[in-house]
Image 1 (cartoon, rainbow, N blue to C red):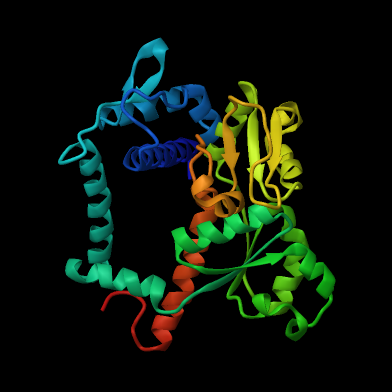
Image 2: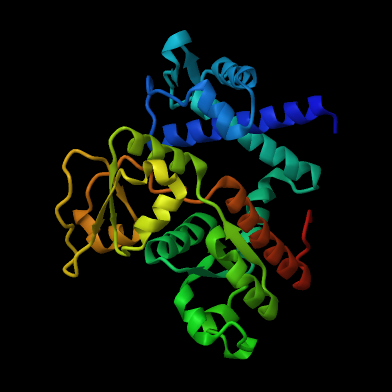
Length: 325
């Protein structure tokens, strides 16, 4: 591929990614008309584009009616007509692409939803989510289960250390033996790779959503955040993610044994982990950070690909076919 085509492909990926983020945030209420969007420089840094390419991406979104470019004032969300308007039209364009792709594979439009359901529900795919930190472990389990439809089991990394790195597959934890794949963060891929090899299971090392990391960094740069969690070691992990220069702005609030939040500096935005939210229930504080996604797009895509592959193999073995009818 020529350099020009590579640049065009990168620009198209950035456009689709940014469009998806904006539309999803509008639908979920995290963005409203007039809200500021990331600067050209931020979009360029996140996507590896230059500033002119980032400007073209925003110009394309402005042509679609999703954003307004206001010169030096930056880029904001444009007014949206939710019923029969721009957001619905964008969703319709996406749906047309999905149905057209199915039609090209000889899947009739009325049958596509049934086919897609079989692609993810012919078998229940199981994942063992391995992590050393409880807050991260439960966040992985929750998102992989609720957003991707994969059954999950949380596995503390310490449990594997106790089992022994050289343990035979039949002596490893049942959560690992019974799993179709192992999921961990990039911090523990090296430790888990030998175990995945012995088990003959795929291993996926996931990354954090870069938009979430960027938002945390912004809040830290503006004065700090309060992190409400259940595992004190989460502070060190978060510091590794945001970098030493910003780590000093983290104010840790580890839940007490009675499930209450200890005193913390008032006025700072709160980052609430899934584990802490589960223990707090209805008493959870407000947070400006979205509940999901936690996973980066490429990590979610890798897990979705495995989910589909395992289901398509099961469909083929059962005589249901893997593509078309």
